Image (cartoon, rainbow, N blue to C red; front, side, top):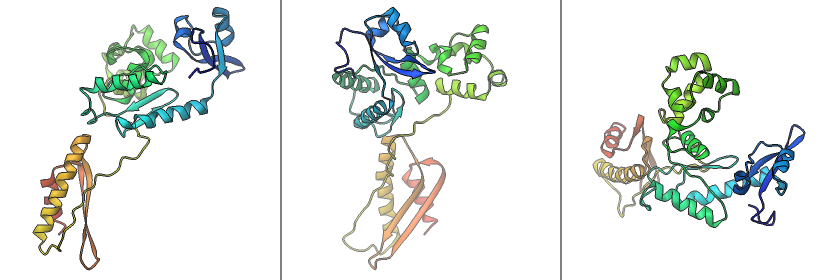
Length: 288
């Protein structure tokens, strides 16, 4: 957001104070093409690009703007998380039915951001860590990511380079026990997440509402089989919603409101996520 900060043809940067000196915290596209990058001291940047326009960064305002963008992304999916200082994570599983593909959804998001004067780099991956890394480093496949994507300590990255490893594919060829023994289990876990070898989820900004359905009757039900049939119909409706989300449930509860005001509760739990109505009815029969 550079409105009023500098003319569009002037390279622009946000700066912050680190260890007593001003350093670049963010640069625009023009400044980047001139060789400037975050982390460079402002004095050095001005020596290279004298016309550089600089303003102090405002982390609180940046965070608020990122939250605003995340809220706008609710149009695509309720599973939206922020990855400060400049990342957004969207779990679009089961949410692409309004678009030709997941890539088409990503292009729509890029177009909407462009209309706001923002540039974005999107990536599609099976895990949040992989998506963020692919977008950050601008590569097409996780195996092509550089060692920097591992976010390891400088000494660890240097040791990997000295071993002749240059990409995640090179690291993945090494035995996991040997990597864990030398560099720690955290590096092996990070590598697995980047390569999509373990399940990883985002923590959305908003709690996803529980799936629920209800049925009202003109007259009281007098037989338990009629009640079970109604519950099965409701379970079928819920299973459709769960299928659309690509999810299952581990706890299912039914509330039966009697004509005299009493409410009977039935609940079952499963070890693994399920959404099969027939299975739920079999479990609920045991509770009646």
